[in-house]
Image (cartoon, one colour):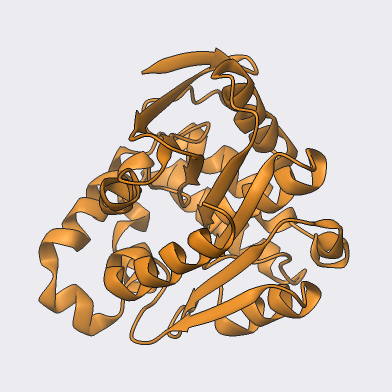
Length: 262
């Protein structure tokens, strides 16, 4: 399904009944990154998944995006669907959107799960993102498929679960170049650590123990900035911890949501 919000078409899916639960995916993925979670969680929640601007079947205008723009997209979607409040789960870029949204629109989130994400990048990270943008603009998304998969999954998992890895590879290949580039301008500019204490809702921080992109130290920084938050480190998982260790991920998430008033 699609809705016009904040100047673009946003693709979304809704499953289940109960309290609203919104899920936001990683860069170079789409709402199908959450297929298994939606299947499980829709037994107790009204699960809303959507394709971020520049991804999946949502609009992908050219130009640099900002996290504030992506948060406004989410707000337009929620307002368009009549959502008054929702639990929120975001992984990587989705977690950055969640933090930005929670600070810009306080009171909308019943709870916030921040998974394999960060609240700030060091200044030296900007060059890495510039190189990725150049690679994609020169050679298309195929240039990033293999290096991205190597960061997102541990080597043993890549060897033992080729079907999961291939599903993600297809999402990476299918990401529009303008969308990847637009979001890659937004991501390295995140700098929210000092403001996290303004977030009043319950917060869960999940991170794969072997995540090289947003490592445990970044999750710990979020956790320390939010003393009431809960931190869960998932063993034998890299960046897409929900796909690599789904049982551990979903156990942590379900328990948190139940305590948060789901």
